[in-house]
Length: 205
Image 1 (tube, rainbow, N blue to C red):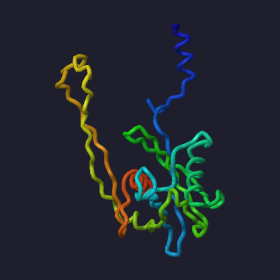
Image 2 (image 1 turned 120 degrees about the vertical axis):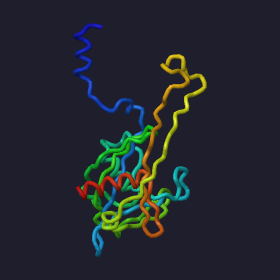
Image 3 (image 1 turned 90 degrees about the vertical axis):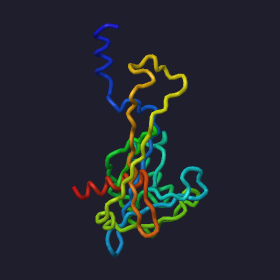
């Protein structure tokens, strides 16, 4: 290959996250609503009929589909489908930092306002119930953070002979932080708590 061809290829390449083409991509909305005592964060409890994470607390969201023009539209579409509201009920939708999961998943979070919370009619196939927590609770209470360690376990036919050190190679253990908020009898954790904590950091900055 000629140098001219190499430069042409590089010039027309848009950098992204290496390997991200094979990642599953999701979008979620962190919904805010206005109540008499101030702004609240709205959460869903996943239906017990769902195969994945039944009964867990989450934000509206899901996989980005081919019908979605971008990540924001995916977050809005999923919110409409899960909360049974119209697009007009969702305003001020803005992005916060996206999250790359160690399990091959990218999550694009957005924050938005639900203008008419009384019109919410959760889709029972996906949502068991909804509830809200005052935003002030999260501003005044730090999440508990626990660490999950992952050890490297190469498959049986791994070519140790190609590594300096062979089977004694010093693999670096990886660690993932899990965030927990406990409000009354509700446990908010995992990616939902991580996104929420990031949102609170932005507000406090």
